[in-house]
Amino acid sequence: MQDFDVVVIGAGAAGLMAAIRAGQRGRRVLVLEHTEAPGQKILISGGGRCNFTNLGCVPDRFLSQNPHFARSALARYTQHDFCALVQKHRIAFHEKTLGQLFCDGSARQIVAMLLAECGAVGVELRVSHRVTDITRADRFRIATDHGAFGAASLVLATGGLSIPKMGATGFAHDLAQRFGLALTEIRPGLVPLAFSGDALELMRPLSGVALETVARCGKASFPEAMLFTHRGLSGPAILQASSYWREGATITLDLLPDRDAAALLLDAKRARPKQEPKTVLAALLPQRLAQALAERHLPPRVIGEIGDSDLRKLGALLKAWTLKPSGTEGYAKAEVTLGGVDTAGLDQRTMMAKAVPGLFVIGEAVDVTGWLGGYNFQWAWSSGWAAGEAA
Image (tube, rainbow, N blue to C red):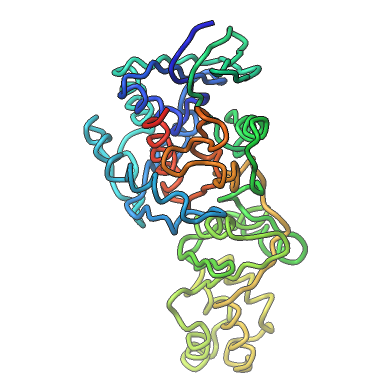
């Protein structure tokens, strides 16, 4: 059995960051990855350009049963710290929108940077190593299909259930429970919403239509783009709202943000009474959506012959279209997993399990989930750094 000071299970964003920091402290570190290559989710993120952090990373943009838990890690290793690392490796990047930072080139640059940092401090990486058992006496013993390894500290960084085709599993959740750690409710997050019945009949022919909207769910509100799909709704505004949506609840869409829809329709009636409603609406909305809404909600007449009350009703719908999703598209399309290891069992400064000295849980496996737009990567960097400082 080979012995190390620290074994990190999972060579994703959080795991590699924990390994780097532990290695910088002079610890002998091994990273075990069950797939064939490290950083698989990093490579597909941001359309292949990796939205690696967000300039607006503040704790209230993270969901958790304990909304204060993430504060310590986020404050001790910030988005600016990670940007400095990116700049050190001369990786060009830009702000796309809403504080989101992307590589100018490829996400492969971020993976290469992390592997270079690991190499500089002697971190060992073993891919295609499947963990078969973990036990703990005075040290952890990690059995794999390529032999066993021992360590005083064990870092769980295997993520959640989202995108199983990338190798995602419930390993961290299962192992945490074996060591007595509690889990919060686990469900898909940042995920497209599915619909059925009349709503889906309207949406399916509109698949591919996108527009700026404000999506609201409860008290949460997101002014971003929305996309119709063959199963319902997607796009950044919907993905954001999905993290706040619960089964049986509704979402509300403002299809004309910052505009008075009813006033626009009534003005058009007076100014262009001979126009068809779909033509009037097409000046405000994508053409296919305009036609579908006109056919559904207005009589087949020119706009000058339509009553003001009908136009006001349509205007109200455009500003507050309330819909009840039938569900989500699940972990296959979810960008993250909501919930995870209960933060009540973890030390917020070190990410170590309070009842299991030497066991650390970081990244997506923990009940901390960020908004869309680089927040979850920053949680990975910050929580990984915190664990690497202590492991």
